[in-house]
Every structure is written in structure tokens, then in C-alpha cells.
Image (tube, rainbow, N blue to C red; front, side, top):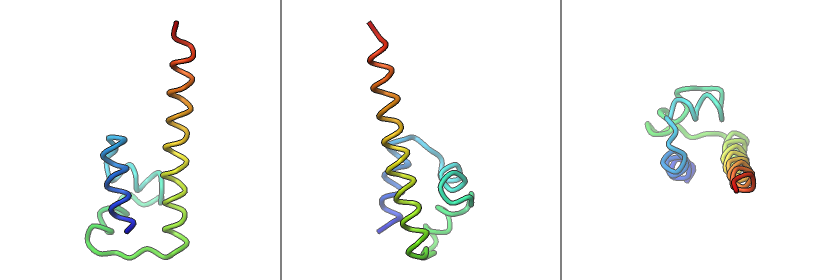
Amino acid sequence: MLIRSIEKFLRQHEMAATKFGRLAAHDPRFVLDLRMGREPRDRTEQRIQGFMAGYAAAREVVREQETAHVG
């Protein structure tokens, strides 16, 4: 279920629901609407999943670069 993945993502990245909505769906109410029962289209769900995967991967690259420069 998409909302569970998003809620986990929000906790992991300490991100506000409205910020996630703006970045991932260009809709600050996106997560709030999902919490109220909104069902996204398949294409939208795929785009959101891709956003979360890309965001997490980019954060990991930044973390690796930061630790590589320390020392």
C-alpha cells in the first residue's frame, strides 16, 4: 500500500507530508488526501515510488561522499 511506504519514508527522512507532496507530486495535499482515502492512479503511484527510490539513493551517495572526504 502506497501510504504505508510514504509514511515510512517520511519518518526515515524526517520530512513533512506537505514537503513530500510538493516534491513528489507537485501537490502539497497529496499525502493528506491519501490519508483521507484518495486512491492514486497507477502511473502516479509509480512516479511516487520512483521519487522515493531516487531520493533515498541520492541521500546515500551524499553520505558516502561526505565520509570519503573526512580524514
